[in-house]
Image 1 (spheres, one colour):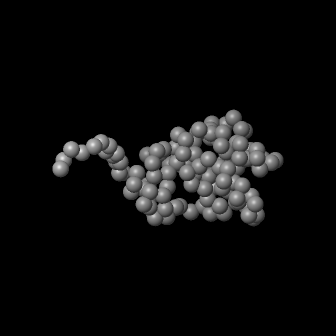
Image 2: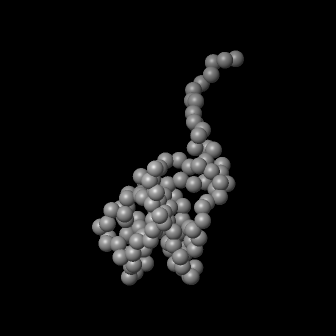
Image 3: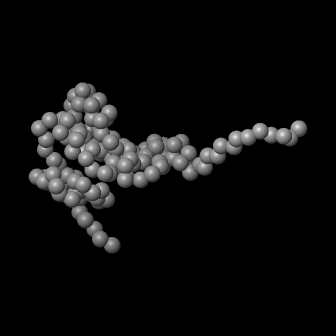
Length: 121
């Protein structure tokens, strides 16, 4: 198979494919911004939403980003994987359902509602 070494991309133009697709590989894109709202708009502009990562040293920025980013998982000052006990899944075009945790098990269940009157006696 193909192997792509861990790569950091900087100075990536806003129209670059890597910012609008969902690359599955060890690729980190660093995109500068002037305002926090601009960063949120750019991050949410993609049709994908599997995961988001950011680093901050203020509680205000942490609250704003965790509440505003459209992603199934958001990591704050942390780059390691998620626990198998935690539900994990994407939003938008990044998948349907969850894996891990109780919610992951529930995604395999099929719910059925039965409605009616019984004449059994």
